[in-house]
Image 1 (cartoon, rainbow, N blue to C red):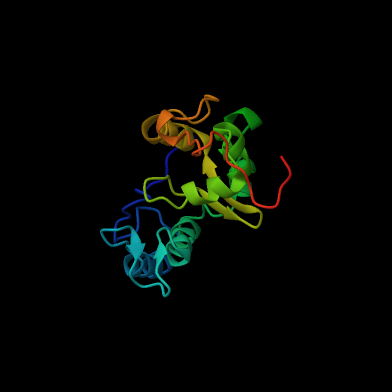
Image 2: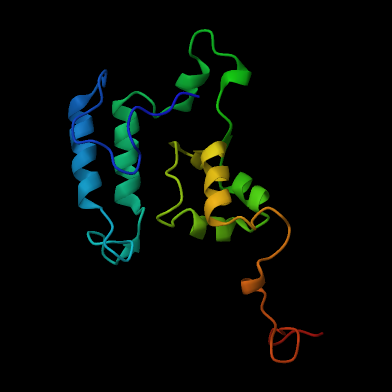
Length: 170
């Protein structure tokens, strides 16, 4: 899979060579700059404050991809001479949950961390990432995910051994 012609974390102000919609690129860049995170990783534009990537940041990325003609993944599939084996392996939140052995709700939290890779596309069904990017992130930031073993620091035992929920029969 060829890489994007720009850095997703820090796109250039000028559109890359061959950009079919430079005006859209310029507007996406403005939106991207407005929704930059502060030192705590919180978008200073959004009210109430949200961790980045916020909705504005997602829309900026969608603008970058659309301006380059890459927003629709079906364009990749319909490219002349492209075989199924040549397509990149993509993964959504459910696939990441299976890879990491976590719930989809926890994956939604993780995908909003500033270190997590940007999605490659925004579909009606949700965001999708390159599986290779997600796996590289996991190896660096969460090496214990996907091994089936919880990290030692996250094992929690209550005062009396097991945690009981109020109102439940044990």
